[in-house]
Image (cartoon, rainbow, N blue to C red):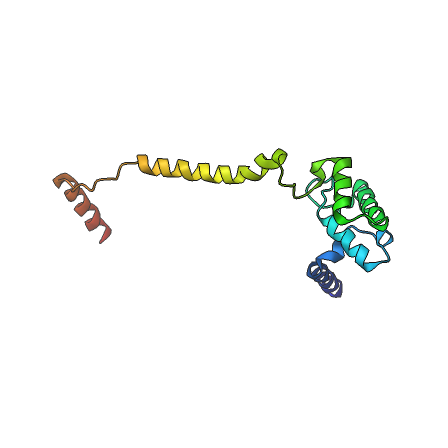
Length: 156
């Protein structure tokens, strides 16, 4: 029982502090806390080229560790955040960015969700306009008799 409680408490502690479960190893961290914070911010914006669905800050892949070290090397050399990102984009391509830049080459990527939404609204509006309003018609004598029969059977 104690072991289960210890595991539960450890899991809660990891969930409470999302940064505690990141893949950055202590040996990778910079001694300067300001540079380390910049490195972590940049790393959270870069895609792991192996995993592709997580940042290099979260990935345990060896390539992600290499890129994290490269980010720290560039920052230590005096590069600005944008220079580090530009360097990595030049080296690995735009795909390395988790949030692509808004440029002519990525215009379709940014506009596709809006276009799909507007297209869906247009199709829904056309479909609603095409459907004729249903006319309420009175029941025939035969239908009234059948309904009365059904209702009388239900009341028994």
